[in-house]
Amino acid sequence: MPFKSKAQRRKFAELLVEGKITPEAYEEWNRSTGGKELPERVKPKAKRSSKARKKLKTRARAKPKAKPKARAKSKARVRRTTGK
Image (cartoon, rainbow, N blue to C red; front, side, top):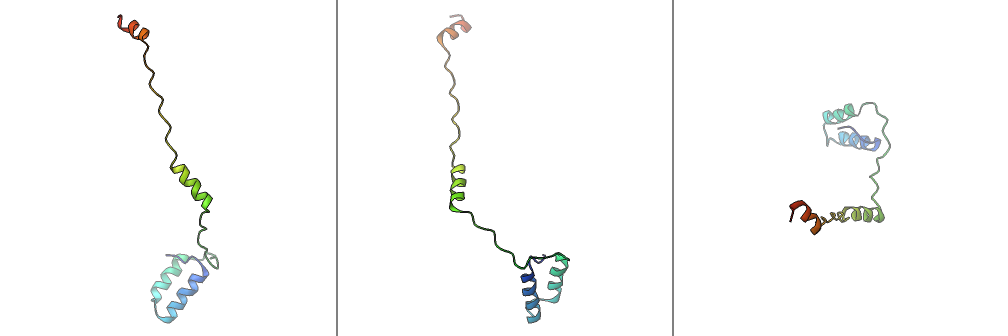
């Protein structure tokens, strides 16, 4: 799994020096990261505002459209087709 930030890489290097992780684990992460230019820190995704959450809820709860009612056949129409 690659490093996501420079801060994470430093933290893993610190853990390596303290002996809490193996050199193989650190090298595996380092290799998978490659030569990418990493950000200093990765910020968590911003939470949605309450207005945005309310909009999503109302969309999900929207009532389905009513089906059109079947038209009743008129008596004259029935007589024509049946001959009565």
